[in-house]
Image 1 (cartoon, one colour):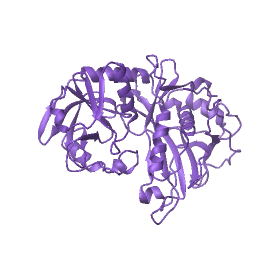
Image 2 (cartoon, helix red, strand yellow):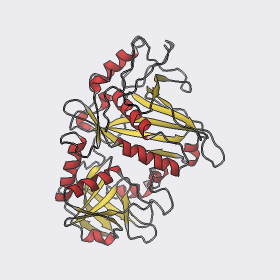
Image 3 (tube, helix red, strand yellow):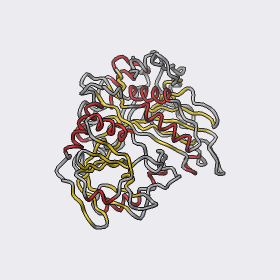
Image 4 (cartoon, one colour):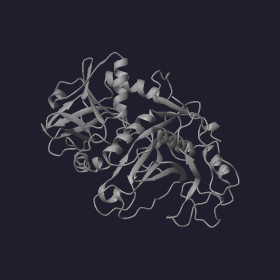
Length: 421
């Protein structure tokens, strides 16, 4: 797997970094960025010098009007951001840059650009606002002890977005375009990648129907956007066991629907049950299938695994369950560690006899389940921490993601921030 050594290598001095006063006009700073894959890291060509009249840049990093682009980026990214790294939760923190790329319906994505992070403008009739024509991905970047930055299986996210785009009648960036755009965005925001062991940089690629459409139809224009935010643990419990409640009336997905792709509507649909569960003191909701109402599907935003002896079972991917990349990775890690992994229909009653239960996802990584409540019956799996199996899998996966062990799977992409300029 190719590592990126100089995604931002083409920066040149003497170009002012200054956004447009009008948010609907071009507010690019590094443009255009060719996201086509090549054997060399792409360079970023710069826009001609912008007018001096500009508003203050998006906080927390205002730019002096006299600063040149390369000087500004070097200053911003040479040191870590001044935030409380010890107290990171899973909440949004504005960073410095975002990435945008557009194309028309029936066309192909071509040149993208890094822009100063800020609000975007959408027509009220945009397809994403009216008909929910949108997808997103979630991934993370980790800082190694030597200062380099690791991405974890970004091509898998790119491939999943392309599958989702086909289901939602949307064009999508190629795998190479997606991965190179992620590299550029991470390097432009490298000062926001937490120190080793303090968290990660969450990366959120979006694909949306941004063109105006009144009747029900695919949008005429599409926008691919990436923004990032430093994050800590997803659940407030941290890596302590979470407590789930099984939902048997409301359902997350239906056969033939969009449960198997990462479309935005899937997540709005879980908010009612999730809010009710949290109001009762639970961490999240475990959903059952909508046909038999007895087979496990997934938690609101992560996959579920059940352990009995040396056998690890997880619901099979059959169109209603998101094919999680962490799920896929844990299955491979578990098999390499000698466990038997079964992807099949898992009856809710199997929770009663399980030795361990755990969840996986980009945000949670691996989260032990302390208890599950089903029809007023509460089953406990030990609420002091990880079980033996989930602890082993968590340790292997996170050490690999952070570069603490050799990557024999060839899953990580290493970026060297020092060679970005």
